[in-house]
Image (cartoon, rainbow, N blue to C red; front, side, top):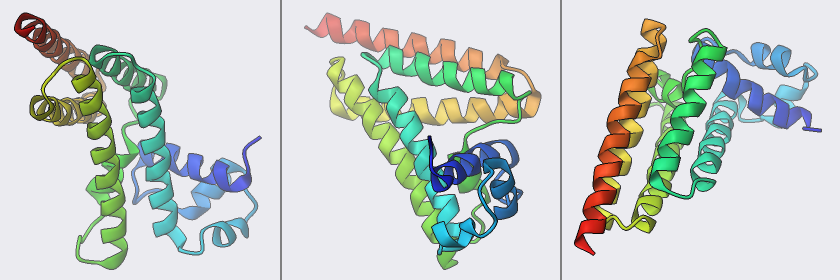
Length: 195
């Protein structure tokens, strides 16, 4: 069974992906997680900023696990898209990516608390693209090309999720998935041809 602290971090990630960072208050996290009132400041002495950072880390770990469990770049793509598709349809298009929400809503990047949150979101994206890059390299793609593909794949999927939420339609995600899949398949074919 998860501790109150772990439940609060998971709840923060869920609420941020559905409501955004600005609309997620510590009181909402307490209610959603069922944690006792006084626990927020006990577990998160850094306040809301610490909770946002840990929610980003939670989301980062979740996606990294999806990437790590895949055997090929195509499986990575399919797993990530399937996860977002399931999440979007299950929540009536309320749920997006909490890392995107935090990055977009961090506010003035010169304020200390925002710098910390933006750095954490940036670290999540770098982690994911590094993991995808490594998977593509393992598939036989040259490292420079794999890095470019990993960044493109991440940016395209995140953008498609935003469009799907706004239009309340999985069409943007599905068409992005098809195009990225074709791109990765073509890349795999060219790698095989070079051997």
